[in-house]
Length: 192
Image 1 (cartoon, rainbow, N blue to C red):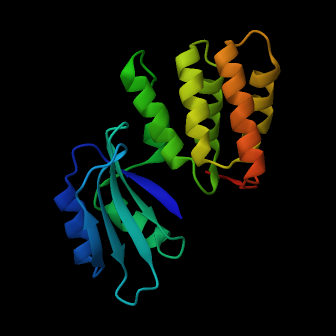
Image 2 (cartoon, rainbow, N blue to C red; image 1 turned 180 degrees about the vertical axis):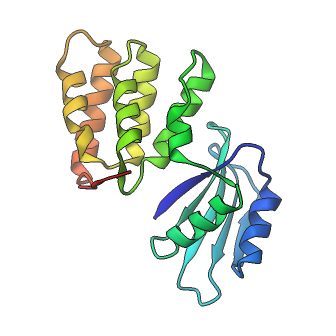
């Protein structure tokens, strides 16, 4: 399964109309909010061989589509051609301002850091892990929970073992590293 972000300002109706226009079948909607998801809808291809879910994330203030590997390329390309997708390169190019917006951007990077590794996204998340702001570091570590990218192992080890980092950040890095190792890091390859 892979995700792509929906561009800010694109409505739920626009996304769901796009699915319908592609012949997808809406299996269910869940308009009842949870702590993390304000809304979600589940979709299947007409032959039920492909699946996707549209979700609106509350803390990150964004929407995304989570699609099965079989249909991801076609679906992501179609949505991108319609101008509905926020491309990884555009997200990574955004500067990280101080304040809540930076945490939102870091979280969005974490949502996209799933599946095949993207070199620029890896570099941006790595730089954020080493940023002097402990809040950014903690949020970047949390964002890694989506990745499974073993390439983060060295930087998490460095943070966990280095006295110069905030003690809470050090413990969080060590804990996340143990958790991700236990889950068997995804040995993903870089993609451009």
